[in-house]
Structure formats: structure tokens, C-alpha cells
Length: 184
Length: 184
DNA sequence: CGGATTTGAGACATTGATGTCTCACATGAG
DNA sequence: CTCATGTGAGACATCAATGTCTCAAATCCG
Image (cartoon, rainbow over all chains, first blue to last red):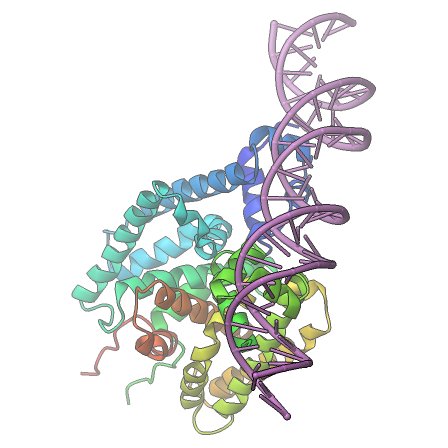
């Protein structure tokens, strides 16, 4: 069995996003490896968390690249962003709720860069008239993370189907809950 | 200084929602009391978490009562619900992300009762034609918790003003991000 | 005021998670 | 096949957080 670093980190994110106090034993078991092996690759909890953040950030950067936020309408770009975020949802669910990391700066910059790019998308939509202007980009970013996390959890718990991921998030975030009244 | 149980629990929720691995020392300091006193009132971390869940649930029940979910339009009821949830937002932010609790059942029932009532609100809105029907009540509940948590965090970090709490959540959840095109 | 109660600060032992090591076994490369 | 590498299981020491205790100071109440 070759050691699958990404798989281990994904399992860790899945578990830690719902039980932040999980022990190394539990994490190892969730990943299907022994505690010894876990410790060989990640020397301690801090190192594991750091690796989690690093991989999550790198993947999210790729997701943002892949979504081509500057192409087409802002709405289309947002849908592409959400769609592409599906594989990273577990990481985001964990990282969005664990702010303790941001004490050890440095990596912080990476997140800010990502936030700036997503904020630019919301601004673009607002300036083009696609999006309403009474919701600040800062709030919209947090709300997006919140909805992604919520979606990841509902899927993890089996309450909703994975295939509905994108539609759940974009449906609510773009269209809102109110039914569009068909013009008479 | 009289011991203010609710104040301590609120501070604990604030802290734990962003740093779930905080020690008893940190929690006590955040609440402005000594670790000894903290331990006198909550014998151990488990007891503290339990009390947190208990108070959070009780408060949320009162919030749901207060919001009169059956009165007026579903939209108005949802706005009242969000408005009333503001003081409890810290607790929800913590409890929504800590599913480890639901291993010790029993209290679970209380949450299910609340969820049923909120789900009924969404169903009512869908049946009356106010709300779109392609988003399941189960998802809408999780999304609502996710948005409440996200709003609590942005306010806690000073990114947005507390007074915008209700408008941020209801604005996004009800109306969505897309600008309503005025009919020609 | 004076007693009763509660708190804060610290010392101390206990506990549970962690870091470290060893060794048998499995897997893969040559 | 044979060697080399990596893994799982377990024992063991270490360490940090916790639970428990004491005592002086502060607060409350009659």
C-alpha cells in the first residue's frame, strides 16, 4: 500500500471539520493507516494542520485559476467557481471554521490573495449590474464559504446528494429563496 | 463579582467557535474568571460543552417561539427569525460546527424539534408560492445555520457592523445575489 | 461590624494524548 | 528469489491539560 498523502489529508479534513478535538489515533483510523505512519509523515498535530492548510490553499488557488473568474458573465464565473470547489469542499469546511491558524501569519498572505480575486469577481458583477450592490464583497465571500461548508456537511451526513452540490449553493446564493414573480 | 453563568457560556461559545481546541485556561481567561471558578461551575470540559449545548438550545427555542413562524407571510416570519437569532448567533456558530455532540443522544431530540419547526416554515413558504420549490427544506436549514455562523464571524472579526446582521443574512437568503431585473 | 460564602492564585497528582522506539511482516524493485 | 523500503502493532517515556486541593483575599448578607 503506497502512502497516499492527499488521501490522508482529505480524510483528516473530513473528520476535523466536524470534530476538531479528534486525536491522532482517530485521524489515523479515519485515513485507514496506523498512528505510527501518520506520525512518520506529519510530525505532530501542528505539522498536520499546517499541511492541511497548505494543501487546501494550493488546491483552492487551482480552483480559482480553473474557474477563470474574469471570463464571461460574473454569474457564469461564480457557477464555475462553485462547481470547481466541490473536490475542495472538505478542506474549506475545516479551514473556514478554524481561525486559530491565522495566528501563525505568513500563510495568511495566500488566503488574502485568493480572497482578493473572489472579491474582484463580486465587484465585477456589481459594476456590470448583474449583482445587487447592497451586499459587501467581504460579506459575500464569507457567505460563500459558509454555504460551501454547509453543503459539504449535508452531503457528508447523507442528507443531500453530492450531485446537487453546485445547484444547492448557486441556486440559493444567486437566485435567493423568494420565488421570482413571473411578469404579468 | 457575582458569577454570571450565561456570560461565561457566551464567552466560551465565542472562543470555541473559532478555536475548538482552546484549553480550560483560555476559556476561563476569555470569560474573565479563574480556572478554579470555571471548574467549580462546570466540572470538566464535557460538562461545559453540555451546558453550552443546553443553553444554546433553550435560547434557540425561545427565539423560534418569539419569531412566531406561523404568523404573516413566510418571508416576514423568516426575517423575524433571523432578527431574533442575533443574540444567539455565537452559540449557533459553535454548535453548528461541532457535531461530535450528537454522539450523546437525548439532547438530539430537542434539535430535531427545532429543525422541524423551521422546516415547516420553509415548507409553508413553498406551498404558498412565496419560496421556490427546487431547494429542499433540509438544505435550507443547513444553509441558514451556515449563513448565521458566517455572519457571526464577520462581525466578531470586525469586518461588518453588528447592525447589518439581519440585512446581510435575509438579503442574501431571500433575494439572492442577482439583481432583480425591473420588468420593462 | 462580623460571620459566611465565593473567588483567585497557586501547588500537586492524575490522566490522556503524544512523541519515540523496536520488531515482525508486507510490498515492491532489482 | 533477495534485498530494501515502508508499514502496522505495540511498549514505553514524556508532556500538556486536567482534576483536586489549600489558603488568603474579596464579596455578600444579616
